[in-house]
Length: 343
Image 1 (cartoon, rainbow, N blue to C red):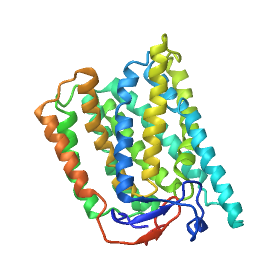
Image 2 (cartoon, one colour):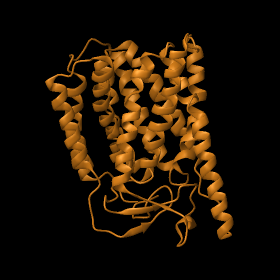
Image 3 (tube, one colour):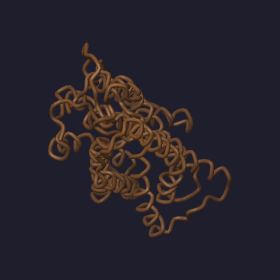
Image 4 (tube, one colour):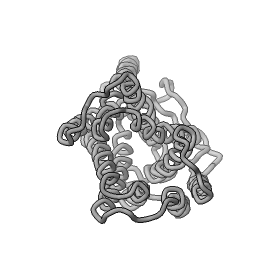
């Protein structure tokens, strides 16, 4: 698998659990180009970025809201996964195939555990350091992906992605540190750095899981793991699990359906086409969108440094985007293009 699928390259992607044979001529497939995957990635980032608005009005503690974010998404994710698996069984029966899809349960389990760790340490960082520090350290996730991508999933990081990352990092600093650096503790900053590590590992695990599973199925099963871990964290934290009003319950429902099922689900779709290193830059888009939503819904001021930071991030992602090539259609399973470098 190349580290950077081309934008002009259209990959044939099964909408259900894939097998190597699923891309055979005559198979029912949906063509998803890298450009479409990028658009879905940005849309997913916006769905994740609005989560603070829901959390702020959820009327429960942070660990409880994190649990409901995962648990509340499961009904919709179940329907998505069931549709994919039913369709895949029908396709395999029609083709009289015997081979089962190459599923990596370890990658799915780790993805769920890593995302739970990301949310747990994120909330710990907010408690023990300034929000600016916590947010900036969380934005370092793409560095971990770049460092670990080849080692863990055998996927190289392109120069374009590294150049884009070099612009996104100072952009993130301008965007989230406008209120000043400091005001936290070394422990809180360490929690923030740990958050970024877990989120980076999450990208890598989902990318690996998507080589054998479709997006909805991957997101459903990893979310079961995430919800189980976060339920324990919520109980141990002493957070009230239930909101007091209908408004709080609706915000929790939106958190699960929009930010998790929508945000993480679209991220899983994109990670079936785009490299983990490029996809991880979505966290910078999320920071830009979060500032925008804060201005729209909470009346939070947006200063010149934030505008400049947002512009740097957008330019960095533009530079890192998959290279446009005049290429034909390449066969792929539902997880990745069959290009050199895949494990």
